[in-house]
Length: 185
Image 1 (cartoon, one colour):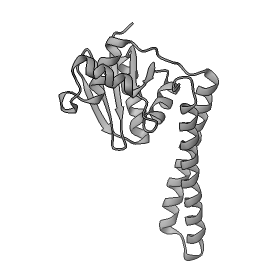
Image 2 (cartoon, helix red, strand yellow):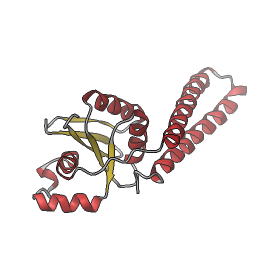
Image 3 (tube, one colour):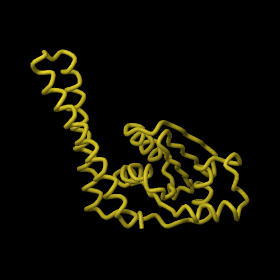
């Protein structure tokens, strides 16, 4: 088994990944396609564990994608991470990245990965597929809007609004499924 431990810090702007013991750091913007790219990159390095902090927001879509990709991950309590940081003397943010701290936590503490049940993984895959389909429809409709006659413009705009709302609802359901899973608890 590979002995790489990964810390992942997801915020509204970025995804930051740190790998121990190699010290690799990888950063990208927080966007749907970048979450998938992060999962692919991590599959390539085959980590023993990816550690994320349970903040209740940005780690949810990341954890869901990781579950569908078969990546081992643990979502840990922020208090445990703070206590760990205090114990190892790494409380200052400028001392290391948060992703680096999470990777160090994973390497020393070895939190248990909590794989999701297969039925939940299937549900997440279905939601991802549907979101991708709706995104493709949205791109098509936005393209039509540019060339739409005055008569059709209002109908196309209404459909774009409907598709955008559908994506929001699919994202919420995806996040809710992850939040109420065993991995979250």
